[in-house]
Image 1 (cartoon, rainbow, N blue to C red):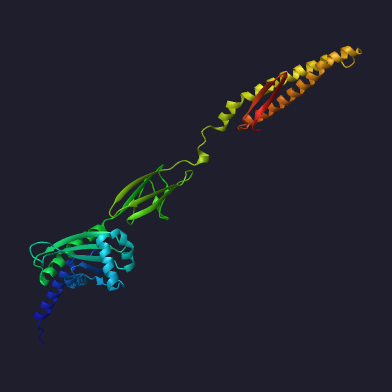
Image 2: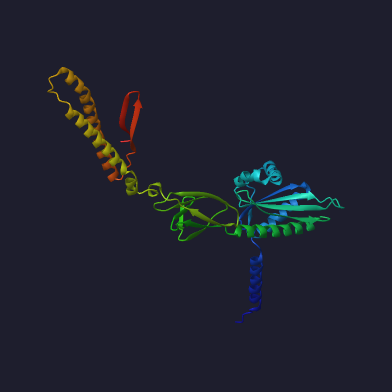
Length: 345
């Protein structure tokens, strides 16, 4: 039995060529679903939408209507043409991966049939990715189809290049070794640097390190941006003592001796006056005269004893490194003199 291999060879050859052609077709801005909207020249809108659908579906993109009635679709198209940022939420609600907006505008040249085809493509979150326009002179249906395909090819490539760019943040900390989280997710330790790919937009970055305060920073990144960030961590408050306890004790150690010296001197004077007072004196006049010596002696002795007690307390406080924040005080009012100690005990 003979086998004619020529037809089979031709079939395999055609299949290979078809695969190469399909692989050479650019992806439609990296999306699997799309919505097509038109505004402007209503007479050509249906033809533009048909040509765009055929181009997208040939590249594996499923064209959907997004659940939009005709009137709502027209309103969204007009809104995007006027102020894309204001309509971002509406684009997101359609649920499509990409939104393709064709604006068919009069070219205002010699021929009334001349038009400009302006194409804008938006991401699923409403962000504008790319835009371009083509002039269609004497715009017959076949010419219009060719221009639609050209502008689709240019805008699709531009959008794909933009969405393929990596958005990267590189983080260093001073000192190094801090744990880094981005939007609540641990991404690594900055030793000395951590690199992480993120989506465009605002992100919350935190850095934590033992014996240091938690550092929080918010950054906003655009598509394809690479940002280097240095976070400086402050030491915790309990580790930032400026004066050691032993130093504070030495600075205030003079007060126990001053107060103690005054106390000893005052008590000695008071005791001396008490000794000079002789309660056995028989002469009433003499006993009354010495009474003036006994009263100050008792007062001075008591004040001296109190001062010695305060001095002992200050000495113990300074030895333990605590700050008593006290100081002796004196006041004179008429014929009265007041001695004491003021501060925090």
